Length: 427
Image (cartoon, rainbow, N blue to C red):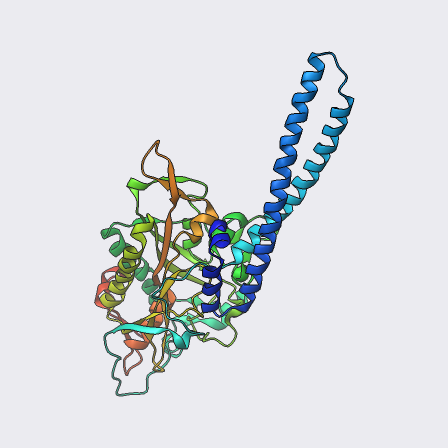
């Protein structure tokens, strides 16, 4: 979340930021936040004055008692003041809760390089790598190919678990596992610590890392418990140091999170949902970074290069877009989407890369100091990047490397992880 002091003193900056995001509802929330904050500050000032008065009355009562004089008047006044303070404290608590929820709903400040626009069509292509495959036959979708090869069963997945669940079979399972191990090996070599996080997370830390407007649409709640299934390893990793102070001389901390991911995808109506593309459960390797504020923009580019190195090593044709203001979401100050080419000729997202600056860390209370015993300097910056989401990466491999006979060539870098298997093909 933003610093409330920033919102108070630079309201025009925050308001202009919301206009760029093309979200009039957030402007209304900002006005409501300012109203609540003004009321809170006014009441806090009154309460502080009452507490000073109570302290003075306590001194007066003690003095009267020492002098053997009655203090009925002072005691009666002190009782009234106490009652007012208790009443005000209850009001202040309610205003603080309301103000925090409103502040959590105000998006992060955008970086100046984010293109202004209304939706994904206004995002700007930064670069592309490779060339689309040239087929001398009609290319099929990944789902057609996998069903022909008997490597997926979506019908029984739906029967057992519901729509957009599936059974992976045979060598496709090996491909999924190979992608995970390949990504972890590459990231480990460039200094990332591998993390397998809890697959459930409590509500409080979850509110620190996720856009509250997406909460019910994204997360699966465990009935009767303060527990939610994670939508990505980013979330439990970002909350790992909640309410802690990190040593600045040990930053950045680089983590490669590996986990299954669980998403309701309630807001996916009208979006591309075929086959493995947008499912309720998938596996992913995530880059996550805690760093000093002055390190974050360089690291944003570094982790983008890391994921592109993975796609290039796999030989995949992709492009990178700088996501526009109307499509970026509330948490990020800047976001790159990496999009892969599909057999229908369209590019679709394979991963994203966000610099969240201090927005998540402020929510979670993750601060830093220059060294042990030194004063706290501020909040760390956090960044997250989809190194490899295996489902979409498998789509890219299957659709880009499909052959006339219906087989799929496995990228050479993955073959050592797959017992030397060179193709997905009929057995």
